[in-house]
Picture 1 (tube, rainbow, N blue to C red):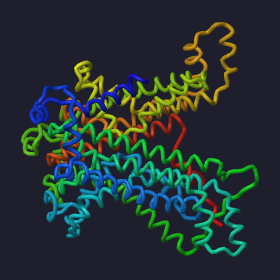
Picture 2 (picture 1 turned 90 degrees about the vertical axis):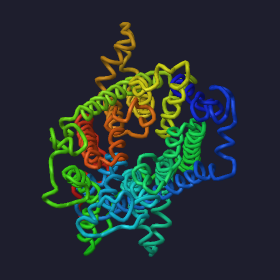
Picture 3 (picture 1 turned 45 degrees about the horizontal axis):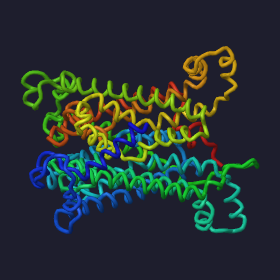
Length: 579
């Protein structure tokens, strides 16, 4: 764990003070590997370069994180309250559909936003659905820049807030609020003095986690910020790498990591003080639902339409975009299947040799993505199983605490910053054999997803008493046989999730691989980014649709195999009896 986490991090920190090949070597006038403070002076010295390449992206990232957190909590919190504390109708359907934006990658929502709102007056001039069907041209600030990035990230993380806040609301004893009602407290006072204090720890944790993700966001600003040169720290870091300023890019990467560590520290400090606050006790409790009365049906239908607009409609829009011969012209005579099954002249006319289903580049990218996902899941899942077994069996020792902490450490680092760490080590002379290799991608993905697998392994092993192994210990059965013949069959359901979750995450990942792939056509997600940046909108939408279908299929498979579903956690199961 020290080799896979601490050593790469130290290597990246070292790269911030060294001369690199290319333009840096020319500007500094020293050979590669020489110690220098040029990168720090260039990036932070007062002037236009510092403003454009650090401070503007920094504040853009700051506002993006804050806006995403506020938007996600407002949307998720409102839906959670309606689902857990009211007699709203269609709860099961709404609960399932509301989780779709979280299951889908954030960049799919960004592409959906573009398909809807881009128009002939801004950006590339491609006509979107609103202009093509209704003649509505949205202003540039609505299509590109900070506002759409906040909205897309907020919509993507709203289900996350819904899950965390809704779980507490559902477990909260309604007698607390009913007692206040008997004492003639106003609804406003009940919400501010009882409900909000109870859910505040979950709200704060959700705010910090969404802020951290929004601050380090890369793909959403790439999709929605390029036309107006809206950069965050993550997108600026990639731009500096491409321009040859690796030292300054490493500094920005360390800044993103530092911000993640600060967020975690704040979260631990504030939530740690509230851990004794309980909502479930041994006394009898009940859940009473607020009667929406005549507003029930309008609110239910409005929320159903809203969640459908950001869960089902995107799939329809992506499919429609792949059928347009010329992007932005929504007419029957402009529909074609050439982008899917085109061959010969039609394919050449559309700019590729063969449609999606007959294109070797697409199939190779799909094969590489699936192979990478399986290898990374095998690495993370098996390591997580071993870590869980060894940590639990030696719980309380310094070595067990160190291994457990190091296994969780990659979770604290944003994906693109984590990729930067391994880019630094693979660029060094000692490990240059890893540079641009598939093996490097497997290691990076496996280590990055290890926190999920290790926590699953530890939690599953904590549930098993040591006495189950005693009979095998008496007759001298080795540890690996005890693990695979006794413990694994007992906890196979929870352990399986440690393998399936990395597969889902890896299939939709862009940030982690964009700096490390041998070429942009290597994986489906990086190929999609290339299509989007080069103007192949139909192919970008087709690949997006493929990724979404694969991710949803794997998620459905994981639910069938493990029997777990996040959709069932907040009144998503049995119908609610109205009071």
